[in-house]
Amino acid sequence: QVQLVESGGGLVQAGGSLRLSCAASGRTFSTYAMGWFRQAPGKEREFVAAISGSGGNTFYADAVKGRFTISRGNAKNTVYLQMNSLKPEDTAVYYCGQHTGGVYYSQYAYDYWGQGTQVTVSS
Image (tube, rainbow, N blue to C red; front, side, top):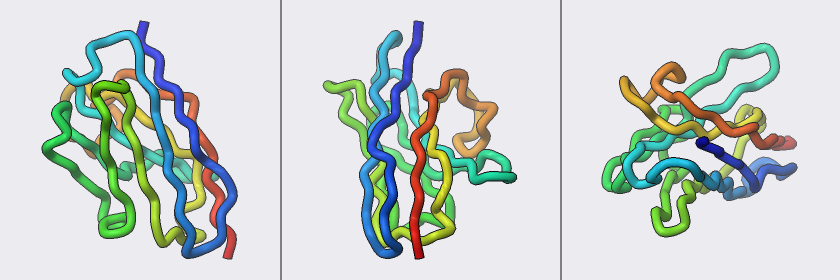
């Protein structure tokens, strides 16, 4: 059974940084691309970043490009999201997902999700 557990969220001032982690279990981790999505109150879940199974390819939403960095440690079965220069509009619940097929920016391409971690950026 696949399990994804996010951690690292919290409250930070605008301009600050946070690092999210997502620990995976249940399938051969390096076989699957991983993605980060976020959902703000009253909004749909949106793509943030994705990384291929080997870590050699990364993809970002325009809103976070240049500020966020996705990485993975396959030996630790963990994917990370380093978030710098945070803005109030980055406030959301952040979810990691395990990619099963399809375009990386679609939530429907992911078959397992974590419970989410809250990120709040104050102005």
